[in-house]
Image (cartoon, rainbow, N blue to C red):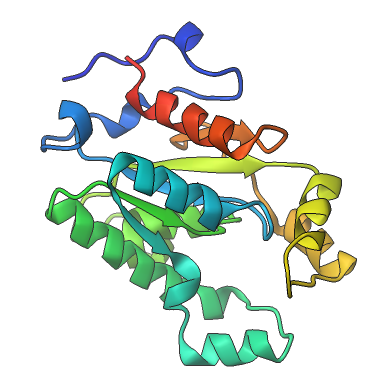
Length: 214
């Protein structure tokens, strides 16, 4: 087993991510197999960061937006916000993808907003995360060990990024609603927080260092 990283070795905005390690497998560089979810509000650069990280490490990459149901896509195209009932089946489908990669011992990166703590729980545990009426019932499968990477930036920073996107427009009130919905990860969740004040190469390097520290 790889020793947990020492706190002083991690980037300033990182949190220890050693809870991903207690699994056997043939993951990157001899470490246990790794599943990473790059999360944050719209415009944070989840797809850009996640795809760049996956390409650099030779891992599989998934963009959560590609897996919305036709009903969800239609609703969003009409300018309607998705509610929890819309999102839960989508998140369960994403959990199934991560579970499949876990079973095949494949390192993978998923770009997904994962704004609420409950959403992250569904990614980790699937449908069992919302079956709170029978908490005493054993789970069909153990929870996945996922490292959540929160891309953290101010409203002004994100708004500036969105303005530079060709063909992308988000009214200020919609961006504000994203921040109102956001529940930043907190202990005991397994996560690191990376500042978007840094350049893309610096962000990717910080995530890579957090994964391989120790």
